[in-house]
Length: 84
Image (cartoon, rainbow, N blue to C red):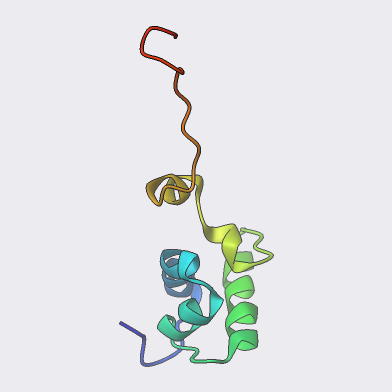
């Protein structure tokens, strides 16, 4: 559900992180910034700086754990059950 007002601070970071995999347009919309991507990016970078985290782009918020849950990781396994 989209926020009725632009989110700020940690709420913005949480919302952006939760929606980062869907792309910047969707994340901005759901965080209350509509189609104002420039303001969304600026506010997100400022919010991250305020907590000591450097973010260059939205995808920086996607964790390895989120990528693995979405099947974006690699599978490491033996070629056959007898080869370990």
